[in-house]
Length: 389
Image (cartoon, rainbow, N blue to C red; front, side, top):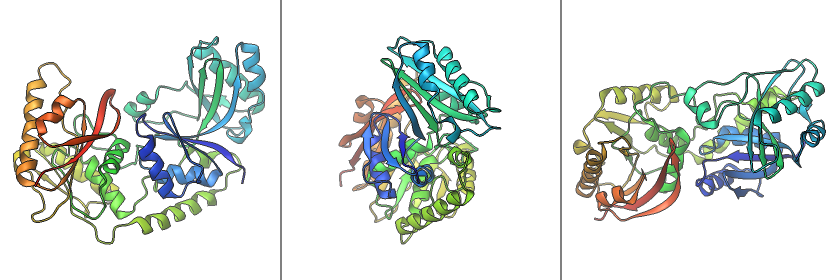
């Protein structure tokens, strides 16, 4: 099968975690970490494997062209050479997301129009759907736009045109229909679990679980359930792609998952003082197929429970207090979290998202930074440590 220039988009700062995951999944050995993702040369099978099996990536794209364009005639000439027919059929629709930085061609809508004209000439009958939106808006609105997405980047007059191979963003696993306040994206929860070093066999507890994303992602991993097992991908709709390849890749994912599955499911628990959040967490776990592998309870942080006589992991996303007037309350909560862990979870490992060292110090637990990224536009650190015995 034809070799493709593939790229898995990852939140900046999480590339090394995604690279380790991609290698474990069995993607081509020539994987390379790059700013904002990982790249490889692979066939369509590898594209579908990445979409279905990567837990940390947010989107997979295939590069169609890279060229220099300092004028619209130059852009139009190169656009006519792009293999549009491999991606869009005669009755298909397309949309473009264009960003222009430090380039002579700086009007993104005008660039998109030239590319759309070239596509429609190459694919008679195709239509252009609404314009692409920024990645964050895709995530917030929670719906797919009509048509095949093309991601176009103009940087210092170099134009890169890529075809989205995912469709809906990969953090949309399909289980989280009920959410609590400030829900944690599934891909970031998976990255935090990976950064924690959790062995998949020891107990894992989230004492501030909200709608349950961290325990659910941990249970999916321990149970060997691929994150994209039950959803379609844009690449499966490309012209000439056989339906059987998707079926074969899903069967392969299940084989990979079976090898990674924990021999015995560990205790995975979440608790929260908000009864509505816990109700949402249970409903999400049911949709994810891990309701029997997770236990959620309504508990104040001061009443958080940990497996007696065992060592395990605490993986959580405490509140940050970004609103005016919240700083003191949040600082007290972090101090209380540290007190509870020191008193009830000696020897346990800890991993959490933190916006600043000042809050981390409230825990009075030695921590190191495993990665840095952002959550909802807020810069955060993925910090890990161990509670003293």
